Length: 473
Image (tube, rainbow, N blue to C red):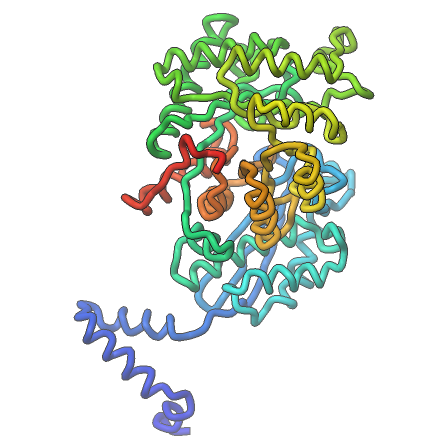
């Protein structure tokens, strides 16, 4: 075949001419680079390979990382994992071999990606997110993704989402907004964990997290500064009251002082906020995670103290009175999981009191059916969104739409076992979730999300919108 025949067969002469004309119009100083990029853009992107591996999360526990290749580049994603998994969430596939990583290996999930998912997705257009996700759901054939593993499917779904954004030449948050039909990307209010307790720390505090929300900031950069300054002032407050040894941190970076009283912990936080001078601009949120200390129908507030456990039981009615008192004494605007995950009666009751936002985490597990039940019964008024409980980007978008249509708040959340993947930062902006919960302004895997939000705000420039006082809309 001659050169001319080759050019004619692949219509290269016309394509080259178009590229040269474009370079001339652009008055480019580097025509070779310009023409190369122009030709590259003219080729439709398709998935060419998906390669997975086992890596470690922030707790030293295995998780899944994926490299998804198109003919235009490689796109990486890794997935987080929680301390516990519920029966209503998508199934995280673990190997179960106690002799390897204490049974927590993910070699099976990795093999499913390399042997099955890759073959199914090769040749697909990465911009068609819903088709990619549906192909994996169809391949799995189970309701909760138990065959391939939600950890395998989600890692590929996120990597494909990044590839789709690159093909469209838009930022990831913009691509997510497009997929969801959103036209108002919004920087979320960060919910910084400042005190850790419950199963996230080794202290005596039953409640799992106390967070600060800088809703009075004018932009995300200012909110990050407010939260960080509060965090550092809190360290000084704790040190003054009980010594530096009480400034160890929990799994998500919050301080874990050896205290057991809700009020004692809240007083520490209130004092730290006071020292910043921001007072009215910073509010408080609680993650009670009450399921962890519910025994029967009573709540053991000393479950973290073996020598005291069983001596400080509270009924659901006692807990309601406690929450009412705390909300009147402190600037609390949100309480997550105030009761056991199956105690619909009392969650509905406290939600209808209107004392603050009531967030469903263990109650909902980001499960569409549980969300629908909660909406129907008015059982809570906000969703804690954990992407790994859902399993695909498309389904994540769907449950957020479900919550938003019910006029709920949405809190995009990290997990206890995190990686340095910053996907949820872009997700929170693209879906305008209002709040992002990514731990303390401490530890690299937590800060990566907050730092990515800084970059996004910088990129948006004068068009950047911070949720601020409108954090629930």
